[in-house]
Structure formats: structure tokens, C-alpha cells
Image (cartoon, rainbow, N blue to C red; front, top):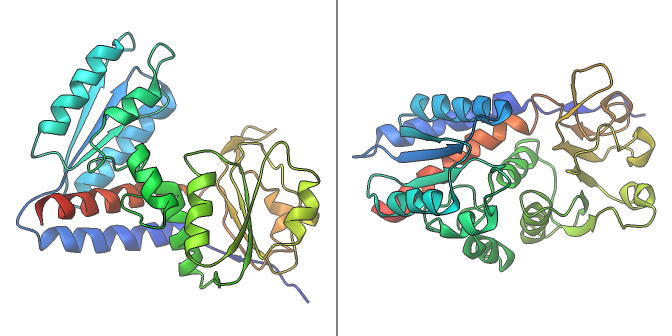
Length: 282
């Protein structure tokens, strides 16, 4: 009889990863350099960038944030990135999204040196992942795989469903699951009878940005549920894409919101920066 899911503590897993990164940095003859570019003063982005900067300093990185006004032009931002590409002290470049509407984010992402693209969004890194030769993997998908491994969830031969097909989470996490020999379904807004598709699966990853969209009766008893969503609930608090109160009594393993996938994103950004530094500097 199902007694309730094992809840993965993403904060604890991320903390252990940051400790490992800090230990590796201490053994290096240099300090990896991470530069974040923030355009405008979006409150959520500002807080997120501040958290990234603090985490980078804590593990021993040389961390810098370039803050540009909201009316920065496309050409000025491109020139800034070009300068960072050429700076030997910068191992990782991250342009905080979303960008103001007058800037083409796709062009900016493609302007970043793919070897310094610690977000993993450059087309070269996306292609490498899709071909099964991952280089710099998007941070949230990387974090999801680490959480699955931490919880000792069997991936080989498992049926997995990914709700959402974004280039940031859905598609790359599907590629990582395929590389781990899972059988993967990607569901989206045009998928027929999503609930039935979910009930067939051993692993459910929700990344659609709709508050409590996945109900408890969508989940196969004992399945693993990874909730990537961060939404405002009806009472103002943070909730995921999964109705946690319903799902926790059905699933075998589940991540909470907050405190599940979120902390892993910054930890994996640090890991990507370390990987990029080692690849560039030896």
C-alpha cells in the first residue's frame, strides 16, 4: 500500500554539489571566472542574479555582474558580449533572460562563445546534446538528472514523460533521458489526453508553467515526479506545475516547490562554469 512519496531535498543535494565544486576550485592554480550580464531592473531577475553572484563567490569563483540600462541597444549588448568572449579571465558568460522586448534574445545567445556558454543555450551546445555528445548542458535539465540519480531512480528502460517542449527545459531533459536509455514521450498543449499519457509512465517531469496543472490521479502509483514549475498559487504562495498535496500520496518520489529543482539550477551553473574553465585552461 502506498504510504506517501519520498520527498527529494533539492537544497541539500545542491549544497553537497557546491561543496564538491569548492573543493575542486581550491585545487586549481586559478580562479574560474563567471560574468553575468543583466539588462534592466526586472525584480525577479535582479534577485536571481544576486543569488548567482553570491553562490559563485562562495565556491571561490571570480564573479562579476555587468548591469546595463533597460534601453541598451542590441549592438551595445553584442559589443559587450564580444568583449567578454575575448577576455581570457572569463570562463563563463551568462546573459540573464528575459531581455527587454527590443532585443533579439536568439541573436544574443548565438553571439556568446559556445565554450563560455554556461547556460547551454548556444545552438552548438544544443546540437551536441541532441547528438548524444553533451558539452555544456542547460542547468535545470542537468540538475533534474542529478536529482534522479541522487534518489536512485532507475532510468534504463523506464517510461518517462516530459510535459513541455521548451528549449530551456523540455527538449534538453528529454535528450538527457534518452541518453540514459529511458523511453521518452514529450507532451505539450496539442497532446491528446495528457492525463492518460502520464498514467503510463514511471517518471513524470512537469515543466509547463501552469499552477497545479498535474493532478494526483494523473500519476501512476509509485512513479517519480519532478516538478520544475514555479507559479503563484491562488493564495499568493509559490506552487509548482503539480498539485503536490494530491501527488505526494500517490508518487514514490517527488520534488517539492520550492526547494526541489530550483536550488539545483544555480549549483549546475557553477558546475558548468568549472567545466568550461577546465576545458579552456586545461
